[in-house]
Image (tube, rainbow, N blue to C red):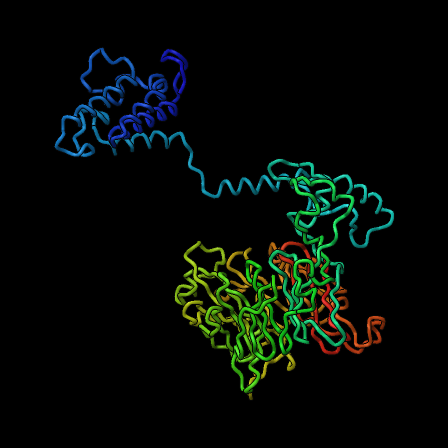
Length: 621
């Protein structure tokens, strides 16, 4: 409110409508029994009511002659009359007692008073579309990019001491000076350019908001002779890399580097000394076994199976590790101590009395109480860790299962009739259920209800130009499809997945089966994808090809951002040793798996090809 009298400046229609809204709120508070609160609000708004409204306005007809000279006094009189009337009606509920004459105006009708005030406000308060704010923000960002206020991605990502590929020698010095000039600046959408401590920026360079595309070999894990990496996965905190090898051993890599002695005496900005602060992913040497906090590895008491370890999975809290071998045994370990917690023999059955069907994939449930597995028996099974028994079986595939995972999906996808009509991955949020998604060598992706184990949908990615070598043969029939080896669930775009078959095209699909994007290389034809992974922000898709290269796609646009030409060469070894040239090699081993760091821009690849001299896993950054 304001303090001026009625003889001051002219009152605008909007101020008068707002004053009437305040008056109506005060009267309704008293009508609902909040008399003390109504008097308190009246004291605050009295100046506004007296300045904007006349004493004989909407509350006229009260029969008061000459005694009430202000609007606030008239409102106070009406509240007092209401209180007196309701105190006299002791036999009735206060809220249901009759109103005094003219309490809500001449008609004494609350709903009419509300409609009248709403009509006055509607004339002066514009109504804008709900998406107007988002549109304005987008236009603001575009304008800042156009004027140069918002830096380009290349400028924001360049760190000191790192050069782009193929820099001209003459232009190198200029670009180096430009990088050093902006090395201590970072752009903030709200604050603009802000100064960043150079030392802290270098220490935490892996935590930048945007992502780099990995393209340079960084570290290489080397196994013993004639021992190959069969499976690998990162620890959820990014500080460890777990590998399963062909000789049955499970090893955790990632020993923290020793801190710089010159910085051990001081404290960083968080108040912790560098020696006591936990290491960051870029301060970990993945080429060394993790022995500082895993004493069982230091004593050579490794976790192991009797056969090749084909699948690994770490629980979300990082405390448990699940492993599966070629004999069909699933083991659950305590990572901190290396102790065996559960052992499930012949998890997928099998014809042999000793060995079961091989288990090819594993995943913990969201609450880490169950383990999902897929195997060579063409089924997906869910095992309870408390009972160490199979709880559910998901059937329908015609060949061995390559991957299986949990995913939360909207409820409408469990209804076939409604799901067929919903193809928009950006549909409205609804209740969700836990589903199981599996991919098989029969060329299909199947979605099951996680609670009932019923099949909801079977998706067949299209395959063009199949050769006889790319067909899956089941008994005497030929299935016109290729093996789907990878399904990657994305959080952006929502309710979508990337389906990667052993073919020259991968697909961004909705869970209803609609194809939203196709990922195909434009530099070569006929190069099949062998393994795939997605970056932590779902911006980049990494696909290892059978020509020894790794294609990096933009998930949203489908365009090729980079081709890592040395990916296959760095991630495999020749039978004759590393000193032999590529021309002398008769065959290059194929990539069998890809791992992506959960927090940093590290990409890894490995091969289980038996023609190698030794198995290696190489990380790129």
